[in-house]
Image (cartoon, rainbow, N blue to C red):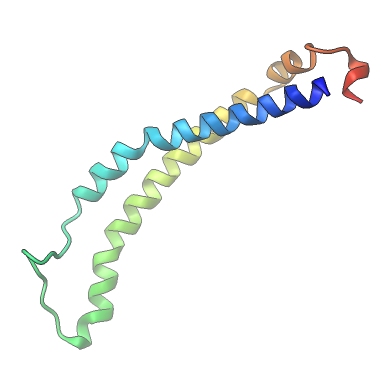
Length: 104
């Protein structure tokens, strides 16, 4: 039906916008990740087996924080986009494409 097509197009716009938002934060995530000093084969961090759990937590903490920071930004952008697209005025434009009787 025509209302189905309008609804489908609306939801598909959400998907396109969310993907665009997600991709727009890629460079930020890469920059944050690259700024975190991590042990490598060229610059190892030697530890004893007894230190492994603490060392793992110490190494992971800044990575987890970076991911959480970017995730928070992505969620804020997605919520703002959703609020805009799902506002009463936006829905009014969607519904105005067909008579009220078509939406039942």
